[in-house]
Image 1 (tube, rainbow, N blue to C red):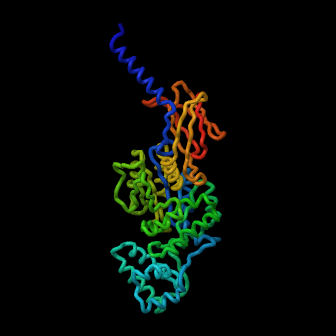
Image 2: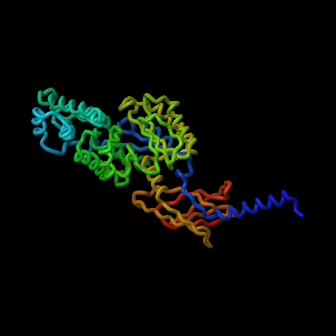
Image 3: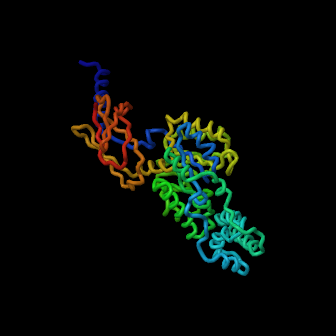
Length: 440
C-alpha cells in the first residue's frame, strides 16, 4: 500500500499535468508591447527650435523616441498660413463701433481679431478665448473683444501681422529637418497652423486650423504623420473636441475610450484603483516640477501594470514656456532609460495604436499537427494600425525552442515558465491573419 503523502503528491502532479496540458494554445495579448509593466511617451509642444537643438540630441544618444507637436504655418515652404475665413474684417470692425460684443457675435469677432491688419491683437484673442472657455467668465471675454476692437478703431496698434510667441519660436527648423527626424523614428504631429486659441474660434476657422495643418503634414511628411494632434493650450472644450475628433484619430487633449481612465496634466490625482484596462497619466515637465517628483512619476508607472505616462514638455534652454535646461532633461531621460526593462518608451501615436489594437483584435487558436495555429482578426484600419502586438501563448513543456511563423517571416523564441505552464512571448503583425507556432 502506497503512503498517503505519496498518493496526495501523485494526485497533485496529475492535476497539475492535466492543467498544463489544457493550457496549451491559450493566448493573450500583453497589456503593453514586449510584456512591459507600463508605457511612457515623451511629447513636446510648439516645436520650438531649442527642442531640436538641445533636447533631441540627448534622446538620440539614449535611443529614446518622442512626439513633437509642431505649428505648421511658420515652417519655410508651408502652403497654409494663418488667416480669417469669413466676412471682410472692415465690416466687422465697423459694426463693433455700434454693436457690443455678445454671445451672438463673439466667435466671429474673436476669430477675426488676429487678422485685422494690426500687430498686437493676437494677445487679446488668447486672453478672450481662455475666458470664454469658462462658462462663468464669458462676459469678461466679451469685454476683451470690445477693448481690442475699440483700440483698432482708435489706431492704437501698428499696422501689420504679429503671430503668437510659440509660432515665432520655431524659427530655424525646416521640413527637411522634420523628415530627417521622422526617419530616425520620431513622430512629427500637428499643433495647428498658428497655435490658435480654439475655444474663441467659430467652427469654420477651427476646421481650417486643424484640417490644413493636417494636409500640410501629409504633403510634407506623408499620411503616417497625420494620426496625432494636440489642440493648442491643452484645451478640452467640448465644441472644439467634437470638431477635432472628426479630423484626427488621436488627440492628446482627450481620448474618450471606454477602456481608458484619463488623468489630465492640471489634475493633482495619481493613478489609483482603476476599473478600466488602462490609465493615461499626463504630467507636465516644467520649472514647477522638481526632478525627484518627475522621477516619482516614472517609479509609479513601473510599479503598476496599467499606466501610460504621457510627459508634456514645452520650453528648452530658455526658449519657450516654462523652459527646462537640456542638462536636466538628460538626467531625467537617463532615469527613464535605466528602467526600459520595465517600461515601453514609445511615441504618443504608437502607444495609442497598440492599446486600440489590443482592445479590438481577436486571436483564436487551434492545435494542429504542425504545432499551434493562430487566427488574428483586426477590424481596425489596416493601413493606420500597424504596431506589432505582443502575444503570450502556452506551449507543450517539451518544446525547447519555438519557431513563430507569420506571412513568410520566422522568428525563434525561447520558452519560459510560470505557475500555469510553459509559454512564449513574441511579436506579431496585427494585419497578417495566420500565425503558426512549432516546437524545435
